[in-house]
Image (cartoon, rainbow, N blue to C red; front, side, top):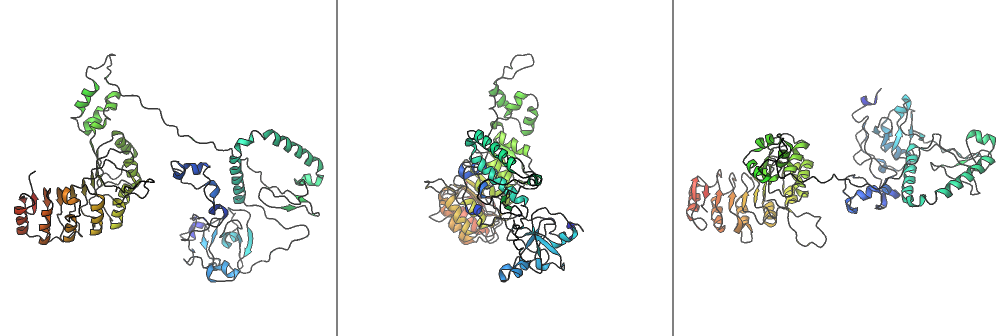
Length: 558
């Protein structure tokens, strides 16, 4: 019977978590290993995402979400007091089939399981033991499900010692490697002394050993300490006498790993400057300089520029000039490939349209961190999972942000976008938001409430154009917030789009007279607004009357 046919959890090993109790878990980072040097807190790039070498947990436990494969419940060993009952209600993970079950849920009769004493909640289940499957983890001890066996009595010959498990040997080798890394500068000076000591000790041991001991591969330990530990941390006693012996593992120990040297980032050499003239096949240069060619290329579209890039290598380098690519449109694409993203970064556009694309959060963050001169960003129709990359990307030159019709946007997500970053530099008192310099913001179709509007007024005070069309929660109180005496948008707002906001009534129309710089007001498709009230507002207006080219659309000539 294969492990794949036992249930949905068979064969899927759960990732274990820290025990948070061992000596390695409670200590702090050393700051010297290559994992610590990679952390951002120690000045590294933060790419490895690994914990400190000295903080590797020695007894990882099952996660809190682990449940029994048979009954679907978590571990309940805390509800009973007896040791046998606790064992029957605790979760155990098999090292062969990776099934997590309660021992009490198994109906195997008198079958026995082999428990691994090195790792918590780890065993060989009775089913795998009965079928004769080989264990992935050696060095376990047998334990019956129904009756707890008595511990073996210490005989005169000495206690029976199980062989160390591979995990324990791997941990010991790992600790020795860490100690070796710490003593790297001292190994060269003391290598000759250690070699001479080891040779002398080896000859003395070979002369003193007995023939029977030489055939068994055992050697008596020096000194009168009475005991000495081997590589696996176990102790052995010579039968028939009280003299200690050194018990070596059955398999040959692997050679110690060489110390890892410090890694350095190797960057490619800088690119050569672009040529100022176009070389011809005859060996001479074209009379037109590079500046004249760029003025010609500015009259071409993206398709024509891509054709020119295939003519020669010089034109290909000239056509990457960012003055030829002020705007790049990648909208309506299902996926963005890495060559496309690299091409965008190489051209450095001022406006980028990614509306209705399948861009991911990782791709967007990679782009924004390399487009520091980006002024216009269109992300309409994307998911909030990808748009959330704006919360961790610096955009100092951004002036227009389009977030229309983004899915699953709540007040909490908008709060993350509008609030200033929490990781400000020490001593920095100014709390600048991420949208502090944005002049045009489009939020059509979002579930925007008055709480989000208050944050918008506080952290985006330089807005001159605001699009709140088809926002279901925008009503008369929202207009009062925008035109209040304490609102910074009262003096800066020029274009306001409130089309499709069905909660607006005729009572909010006089409030727009508080905005002296208002030039465009779109109130189309507002059901509760009467055309007569809009006509009266157009006639009176803020300083100067409006004209109405369409019903409920108010425009003023500058």
